[in-house]
Amino acid sequence: MQKDILINEISKVIVGKKDIIEKILVCLLADGHILLEDLPGTGKTNLALAISKIFDIDHKRLQLTSDTLPSDITGYMMYDKDTHEFRLKKGPIFTNLLLADEINRTSPKTQSALLEVMEEKQVTIDAKTYELEDIFVVIATQNPYGAAGTNLLPQSQMDRFMMVLSLGYPDLESEKQLFKDRQAIDPLDEVLHLVRKENLKRLQDYISKVYIHDDIYDLTARLSKATREDERILVGASPRAGLALLKAARARAILYERDYVTMEDIDVLYRNIYAHRVILKDQEIAVLDKERLSILDDIYKNLARPNIKDR
Figure 1 (tube, helix red, strand yellow):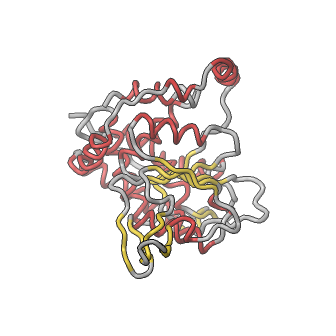
Figure 2 (cartoon, rainbow, N blue to C red; figure 1 turned 30 degrees about the horizontal axis):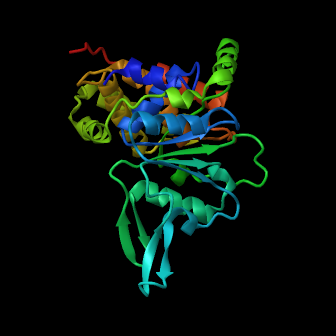
């Protein structure tokens, strides 16, 4: 997989965010869901459209509101007057890539319905279970500001997301270039199909074969343990955090065309995988607030690092 080609292709619509795009690709390869903590207008929809086009996968967008019902997401049984039978009216979850906008604007009941599907990759409607697509990734968004009228995701549900990321605003030069690019063409029209859907699935299945040195397993366990013992943290990371970090590290190794994990993979990924899995004693609304990331950096820097040579 040519990492730079993929990133450059997505950069046609998301300008100046190559590091974030790389992590999104890691989540896609790792079959992990993403929570984007962002303000409106930062390009989240274009990002999903570009990914679906590059990998030739289906996509749907769901705008979540206070009156969105679980059946609006999962689907429901509908009576067909021609056949005199009930048939399934599929909801938007029956796709490969679902963009769930403003997940904190909808009710806890609806949030739970979506997050249960994310975990199980199946849905039960009228006592019958339906499997989702082999490739199923959710990119959910929430606005970290203006929390009035919103329902924050509980910790158990935040844990369903592999990473929390933020596109943020582009820098001055990138925004200037964005303005120029939008004058004549729609950049989405220029995005090319690069990877076949079945090849993406093959890469997802290959992840478990990527080698991880025992010292990296040890470091990951010590990192999780340290978050539980830090006096600034009320609730530390669960074992699911470590599992997500190791799986994402394997996915990044594939992205860099390696069959083994390096310390760089861990260095790059741990913040976005652990940040939403810890609760500070002085809790902030935003997951990616500076205090939380600073605490994680302190913990990580104080861990004894293994001296592992790349194979």
